[in-house]
Image (tube, rainbow, N blue to C red; front, side):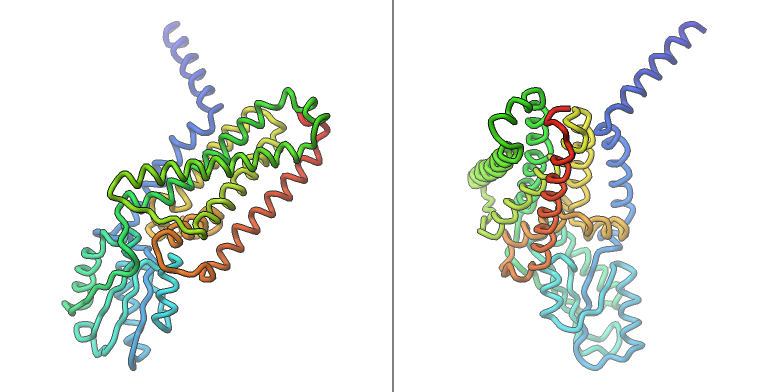
Length: 350
């Protein structure tokens, strides 16, 4: 009985130690739930909730439209779009992952079907043949033509924008907070030399410099392989502002928890959440509907979409003016939050 009590005491101790590590708890709980929900959303070879645009050309009755949408809902989440330009713009913005253009429609088995998909979205391109087969079955064996859009990206190239943003997360939510916490004991002395915002500004500039340095290293390493990621000024701007708002977020945690080291645990949980939910390594359109709505609340989702678009698609930045506005407003909001939190501190150190 004594051995049982000792074992129970040790077990309780281990559980308490685990409860003190929110990052580990996040990995143990959130990761299996996340992937369970994602993979449970699959039907055959494609996710059921993937957004698909339906473009109808010609005279189609209301009953026929309902019939087409009803069939499309069995393998996707369809949206009726009035024209191809709007549909293609939506595809470039990752509002849709596939466009189904229907012409000369008389019934399901008799019509002209063209499927457009984004070839730079490697996971989508890889399931295109499976999608076509499902469409042929659902539409009564009709002939269906497929048309890839944008430059084809290999799987390593598809991951490259996400890798850059994950490095920005590491810098903004790990390096910057860690360095700030390490400076806590000497902050009162530093205050005599310069203002708090001078020190923080230097730290933010260093974070941006590190992000660009890492991007250069990653780019050069990719160039040694057959892959060829494409840097544009628009992509570099997205990387710049994303690193900035992530660093401001890291500072906000440190200031809110008054430089306590346990704030790092909450930051790590938040960082992991952003990586999984922003579609950096897996398209958000493949998530269940509820997780798609959640992803659209995160600034990192818009950064991810724009990074992929500016690196692999022939698009003008104006197509993403609202996305750019979202991440800019997040940056301004986090700056004002940091300003408020810094102003409420009596001293720099706890």
